[in-house]
Image 1 (cartoon, each protein chain N blue to C red):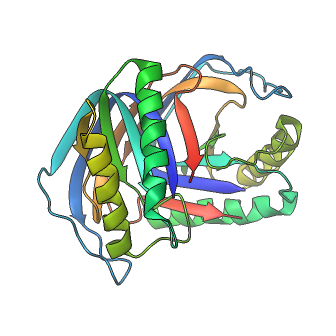
Image 2: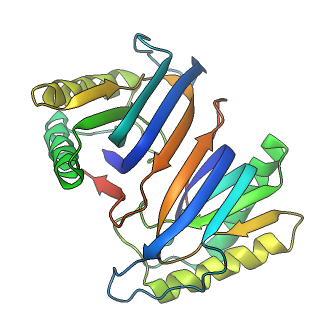
Image 3: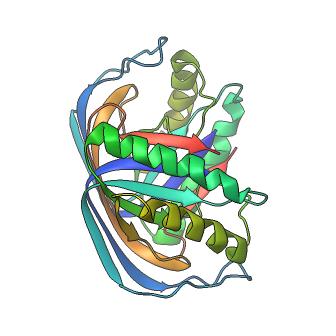
Length: 138
Length: 138
């Protein structure tokens, strides 16, 4: 599991189509084609082959820490296939992502869930302070 | 060496301060505090411990391919410390980045070089087509 965490002034995502790769792709339900968040922690998350579901808690702790450090409680969780060349199957990834979502929902986090399995136009506006971007492996 | 390549409508970068970490940080010269590119390939590049300088050519080929696929020749090369937990020393990274820059300059690429060793406010606007983001390890 890998994650790239950004402290964003603004983040916007527009679904432009459903991914057709890899062959085992399973698409999550699309609730909102357009999503955005302001003053948020953007968490790009890549689930890899062999990831243990328990590792989700370590990511959640990192997200909490970043929220505390920045004094925000808005989180945009964005499934992202571009931090590894060893991706889990879509089915396995969705199980772990659901666990992460459920853990984040037990707190006072204001969570926006990005869609799994789609192409997206993204607008990412990062703050410029030290520590605005954090890379984590679990 | 790792790279995250984005096909961007727009990319903007503003230097907000010089990085103080890691301890061996060496700062490149600041030519422009504010930089931007339009219809470009944004190449975030992380140089890792033990990277062979010859690997730079493989990255350059990937950048050329992305330019060809998108019919653009604008490239923003952005040193990025957030794709690995095993970073090369600043001194070693600068040698390899210089090689990448020199290789890109031998072509018809319209290159913008991001600064090495600074905190930056970033605005990244990605196109939404399939293949808008590519992750590569060399």
